[in-house]
Length: 214
Image (cartoon, rainbow, N blue to C red; front, side, top):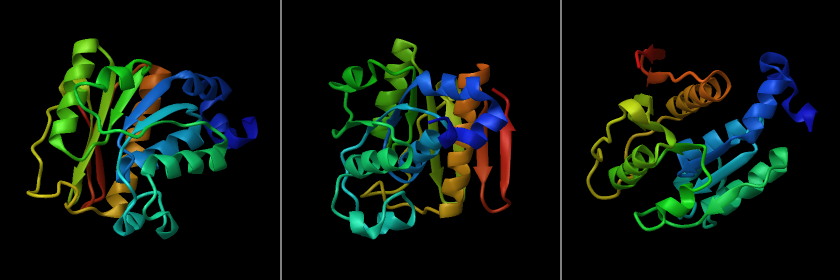
């Protein structure tokens, strides 16, 4: 098992890998950000992961998410669970439901950290308000066009939906997704291992990542 995280252990130390493996992280969303974030965290040593998503995989998801064309039609959480087991042998906990005010308490009851990657303001508001009321640490990742941000709940403001109609139909650039996932993972690791919170903004056009004052 140690060999799976060989390079991370060399860089961060074996105690860091052990500590990351013990924290319960609940991911909200298994789309562009959520699926790749789950995969990244699992490959860095996170082993207590849960994910909430009710969507099925569509063909256009293959360009921006962890899934492939052969997965079209399947539930995102089911494919993600199988993928993480094949990759690093972890058992992902999945909630194949739409998050709402009635089930949020049940979904978050074991969470040490909630990570919000939802793509609509209604769901983000539920996550934001519940975590503040229950004092659960929460990190938000969001993007549109060439801009993305990573924000801790302490300073987060829920944005308005950027499009009318289907909230999933907004500009996405894969390079921005990957940069934002990397920044999000660093924020999670620094909080978990060093108890430090950092907020980031990511601008793709000038390839700039800013660490912003808390």
